Image 1: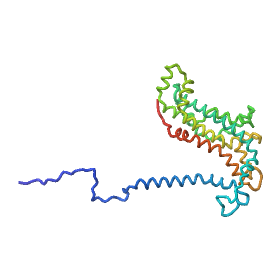
Image 2: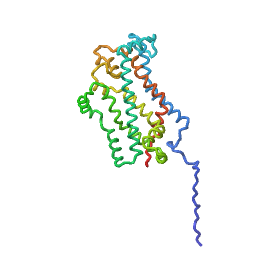
Image 3: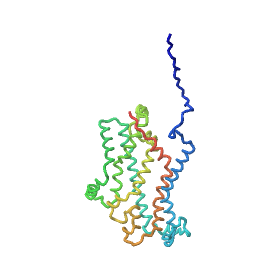
Length: 307
């Protein structure tokens, strides 16, 4: 009688075979080593970002002789604090600062308010063709700004607004395509039941927008305000095109007077230039540090909810 050989039934276990040799690629890096690597990378990136600021603060209080010293000293031997006063006086800083604040504040208000309104309409108001309008606004993001320079210059000359601040302010009240996209995406993350409950209580779209949506979207419009303020404050091309009177210049053009090519001087006083540049960028730094919590929240909570 022939007996069939019986083979043991294979068993499967979750535990690895201790006799199996691990591949070098399967060795896991300890958590503290991985975290330390990320910290070192962040430190290197932070140092590379902050080095220009440190170098600016190093040159600003130096004398003319210390600037040309080799090798350069990061910490000056003698601090000349009067550079922070004498430098801005070279370009009438306070007058240019007033021009810049006026243009920037009005442009920021216009950009934020108009973009929030358009974004609300595209996200919360049901009307025919709203997707088409949304796609048009989105596609306009990829249109280079230089395309419209010549038509806009001819238009402002025709309506007698050339060499004024209006060409720098009026476009902001027509909406920013990027802000409209962000507002529409943010509004779609808010439950639509809020609109329905407010409508039942007799609220219209304007009341819903001002009383409900505007407070709920605080991180969003603060993010827009920071970005718009930074863009208008540092704008150089538009004032250079539309302004011809020195008395109307903003700081972005005033800072160019320190350049030899602009002012016609042979040597640029870099200590005065850096001292003035410190005052020029200080409002942006203060604004960002005050609003960074809302700024990061506004960018991090964007979503693509659908109705």
